Length: 203
Image (cartoon, rainbow, N blue to C red; front, side):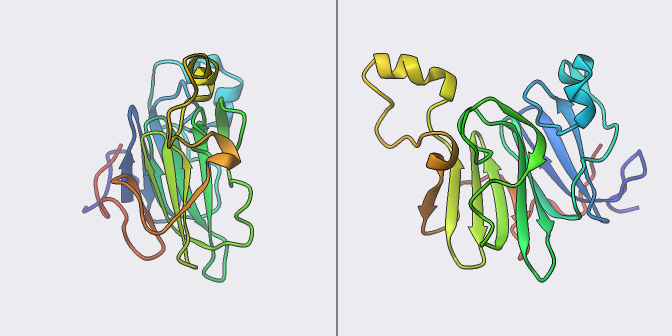
């Protein structure tokens, strides 16, 4: 059957990360597999069992999320746009946050999906991830870039060498940049198209 996987999931979209994959089923569920050292698979059990954070992980359970509309994958982080009702889309991000690509400060990793702060009044129509950057496009026409700057753990050494290179954004909420258009060639999709590979095979 077109779009069906060996494990019986009907794939609507598949996003490829650096060493992990994110699959959206036709019913709006999100499945992940691959390497999970940065918590990019979003599994609650991995917070308790270290074996789920090391080595290649096969699909084991859907990510705990509301019904998703599209998914995206960066180098070591993941994203999903979920339906909040009334045509409003809310982004959820998780995994590597060393560049602020999940929209929160502090670096490190986000083990579970969470919406970035500051977007409560926005309706997001498109989400993309590329490398250490997330791109959120809103129905209002605003485009936000999360991350893409210097890694938090490298900030002190960069400053010792004369500071972070010009034009690099800082991590977390300060890493959000308002731009005039859609950015980068990443995996993702949205409420109005732009998604990767509908009806593809995964898992």
